[in-house]
Structure formats: structure tokens, C-alpha cells
Amino acid sequence: MPTQFDLSLFPFIHGFAAETLAPFEIGAADWLIALVPFALIALWLRDRDSDRTDGATAAIAAGMALAFSGLISFLLFEPRPFMIGLAGNVLDHAADSSFPSDHVAVMAAVTASLAVAGRSRIAAILATATVLVGWSRVALGVHFPTDVVAGASIGVCASAFLRSGLLSPFVAFVVRVGETVSAMAGIDKVSDFIRKPSLFRSR
Image (cartoon, rainbow, N blue to C red; front, side, top):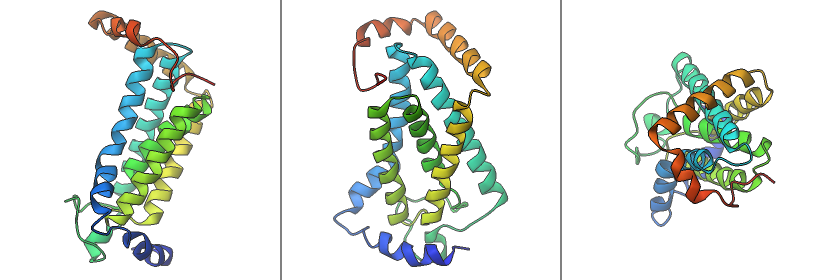
């Protein structure tokens, strides 16, 4: 069941799901996570300054965060706010476990991984998107605040584990496989059109 902290803070955040803000919050809750694959694909296609290694590391961190988050949800069921009458099911979400937030876990993992890699501009954009997604999903009654905090913590921990270098051989293997597939599929030809300074550049 939700903690006293959740029950105290949730009404305040949920109060922002007013009619004028709802369309924005629905869009943020459902679609801002699309920035993650966009950023990772762009890094892969750009193929400069260790782009592919950083992108692969972030992608693996996201996968680890999602897997761990899913395991926790499976083992520890917590009802979502709309399931206990605190909000309507605006997003028509499945009545599964609320804790932790998968969306935030994935986005935080990628954001933290790219930030540690020195890609401050894209990390800042993704960090802002992560906050908006977390806030919106609480405001719309899909999550409690602690779900979002837990998801962010899982994402950061997954990123820290990947960036520690313990799985560097595996990351290198993933990059090699990806490069082989890209070359065979002709995807690398796209890189010729986008190899120029951008917000994905290391700083």
C-alpha cells in the first residue's frame, strides 16, 4: 500500500492534472520516452567520438534497469492510484503493479549513462524529459511519487554499474555485432549525412 509520504504528496501533484494541463501531461506521460530510442539511434548513426560505445552502454543500462524494475514489480505488488480510487484511469493503463516506474527507470538509466560519458547537452534534454514524464504519470494517477523516485534510483544504479567497466567486454561485443549488422544492412551509409557537430558531441 502507498506510504504516508505518497498519500500526502500525491494530492498536490495530482491537482495539477487540471483540464488545461491534461493534454500536455498525457502527451508527456505517453510519448516523451520516445526521445530515448531517438537519441540512441542518432548516436549510432553519427558514429563519432565513441558515439556507438556510449550509446550501446546506455542501451544496455536501460535494459538492465527495465529488467530489474520488472522483477521488483513481479515480486512486490503495489496498487496504482487509480486502482484505489485516488484518480481516474486517464491513460487507460493496465491494473498492474505501480512500483517502481519502468518509464523513469529506463529514462534515468540512459540519461545518467550519457551524462557520465560527458554528453551533457543530450543528457540535460533527457533529464528534463524524465522529470516531466515522472511528474505527469503521478499527476495522471498512474504512479505515486515513491514509484518515480525508485525508478530513477534503479536507472542511476544500472548506469553506474555499466559505467564501472565490469561489463566492458560485453559492451564491446554488442558494438561489434551491431556494426556488423549495420554494415550488412547498409545502415552505415546514413552516417555520411549526419557526421557533423551536434548536441550529441562529447564535451
